[in-house]
Image (tube, rainbow, N blue to C red):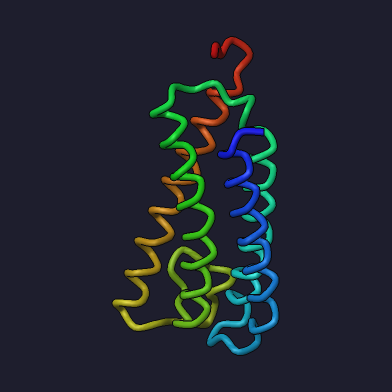
Length: 141
């Protein structure tokens, strides 16, 4: 097994555990719905990284492109949990009309969370597109 597979699976289990631990404290956040979302982001993104690690040897990309896919997947998953948790702590509503309903943070907090969620979106969509491209039937080693 490739060491990158193990690294992705390790990070997946680490993030899964972080998500579980977040569930123990979600009631203490300023926005408990966003706290629940942070818990779920950790668990789901951890599961995603485990699955990605299991499929990694089948991804056919150049070394540089594979490196970009790897790091953007890690950034996207960890940052998704972290920004969601910060939104729960701050009580912000940026890009979260349902979980943020009735909550508002300081303007700088709203902006920080907004930019964080935007970078997460770019990273995880970009990584997913690269992995999908590397899994296409005509991909060559």
